[in-house]
Image (tube, rainbow, N blue to C red):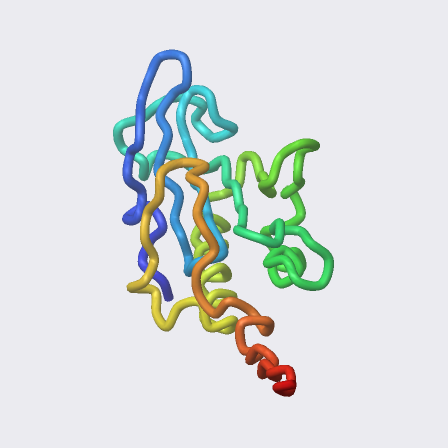
Amino acid sequence: MAKDFREYLVEASRSDDFGRVFKELAVGFKLFVSFQASDVHACTPEKTLDDIHEYTHWEVALRSTTPPIDTPGIGPWMFLREKEWAEPFDRPEFQRTMIGEFIPTEHCQQILEDCIAYAMEKGHIESEAEIRTVEPDEEVKKMGCGGCAAKKKPAAKTEAPAE
């Protein structure tokens, strides 16, 4: 079982207008999870609490580097969408993330564990210890394997015969 997801949360900012925002968790080089709870997020209670263990429900967002998270057949959502917790998630128009509102705390823990399982199965991480935090919505360049095209060797050059 993974470490409690709340132990990973690092506050990125706090304001009266935008509430509190936690940094995202990068689970490998492709999958990012955001757990949010404050007076402007879809959480219970809908307040900015100093003790994050008092929240019973969270706003959760999942995104990935290329391809988009819900790309049929290859996006991480194809692995995650059948999970017990996935039903309330949707990708709002013009956004790149799957968003779930009022997600129970126990489902948040399972989301993190399922994301870790995905990243390990795909070879993006070897262990939970590789999870890191990133700024909210930080553009992260794709790193890692480079895909199948990176494994192809360039065709050998042939020199024109001398005249």
